[in-house]
Image (cartoon, rainbow, N blue to C red; front, side, top):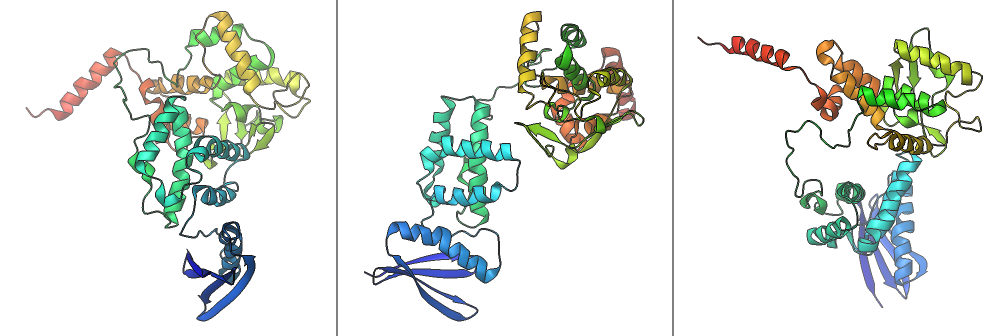
Length: 385
């Protein structure tokens, strides 16, 4: 039996040859030929081992390149994804990695895992997406698609495919997308509470939930960031709180992005409320404590209690995250009264003002008299008579 398989790692071209029923490696390095037996029997299982384990180790040893290199022939999505997630695990927070790896295992692997990268077609991707849309909401399918896109994009960067086929498949969010209508009350993910609702909520809550709601409403802080706050983060003298960590599933780690590391200002009414809370939990490390006097494992329990309260007092159910949106929308709707959008953006921990405007621009409102005055002023500027 004589068989030869060529694989390529960057500039290094390696032939895997079957000689006397054993796999041999044959390649050139620094103008010298290297020809050695792996001592492994020439079968498919050992061939996979050579491609995924043996050769990458040789390449790393010869080149010093610690980045994962990929061979260019007969590579299945499963084989490539193993390498992809090995690298990806060290670049994101643990819960993000686990979530996206689970998306791959449950929503992508069963359909495409054993297919070679180059054989995944646009038509197959469209069929896969349509099948998912029959079971899951569009936004969920977008999450699964995002994981698949990242894997294929990494394959493209490593010259394993000529193009990313998902680029040619419309996102579920653009399919049959309806135009927005000019209505006052849009049912949107960003669905803030009005002042009367906030007052009603606060009047019907006590303990941790009450303080949690109040702090979120006055700062726009993210829930995971809030349950991570310690009294060392609070500076009453400078009237600010340091935000540089978040809690996910009991683990205190880095905040969402670098721009999320920030100071948030303590407004006068919030200062009163924080000093009230300090009389309760000031002898402990964290601001908010569960019934066992320990920091919260996650904000999920507070979210469940929050939704229960909304139902009891007759307010439309929304997630507790909308308290962040409530702070932002209320502040931005008062820009004409002197509120600085840059300050709002920094309080929220956005990278720049454009992100804040993208999410909350629709809340920048003005009365008709102000709007008409601006129209007349613009007309004067453009007057050519």
